[in-house]
Each structure stands twice: as structure tokens, then as C-alpha cells.
Length: 150
Image (cartoon, rainbow, N blue to C red; front, side, top):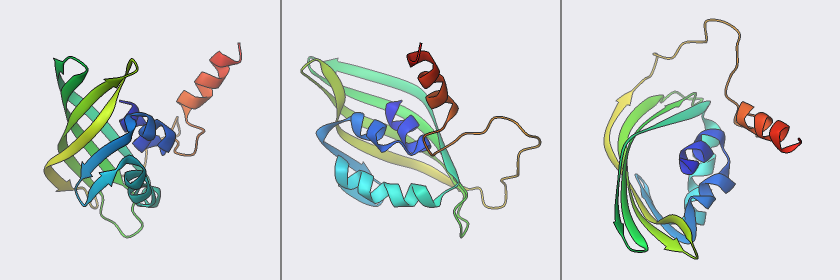
């Protein structure tokens, strides 16, 4: 969930924190370490108007300090300047490891199951109201600041 929030809000420290420092990621078009993954995905995400990841079924198999985690995901991507809005269905298959009491991703496979074009299907909001932010001023950040200032 930290990973999804980090990707959707462009909070790459949060993405980084979902992995161990030597964590490995396998995405469509990418294989490598977490720092290289962030360097690869960041400019792609910054071109977009937004992303929204939903996590569904989640199954974990514990094996001592190791675990296999499988999470179903639906992710929508919109607002690329040249088009290309799409939604994809995937599974995050993770090798999790507990090190010094902290569970994090040691290796992740983002297994793409399907992709659907959403080109021309997005519409503007029907009225004024709260909107998600990707610049560090999202409502969650504001609320956290309020509560920690108490």
C-alpha cells in the first residue's frame, strides 16, 4: 500500500521505503534495483496527469523471515500530453523479507495480466470539490501535518 500511495502521489521516498535498499523490481520494460526503478519510472509518472492504483485480493504465505505476497491490482493512468490513457490489471508478486524486524520487498514482479485503452473516455469533474494532489500538498499530507502539530 505504501508503494501504491507513493506512485500515485509522486512520493518516491514512500516508494523507496516499500523495498529493502537492495530490492529488485521487474516491471513491463524494466528490470533492476529499486533506485534504478525510481529513476526509470519517475519521469514517466511526472508526464501524466495522475495514476490511481487499487489493490484487491491479497494472499501472503509466510516462510519464517521470508514471505511470498500476491496482490491483485487495477491501475488507471491518465493525462499524458500525447494521449495514451489506459487501465491495466496486474498482480504484484513479491518476495518479502524481514530484516531487523522490518518487512519489505526484496524482489517484486509486476505481472501484467491485461491492458485497456481509456483514450477519449476521461471527462472533467462535474463540479468543484476536493482533488488529489501529486505535489506534496495532498489532503493526507495536510491532515498529517495538522495532527502532528498538536
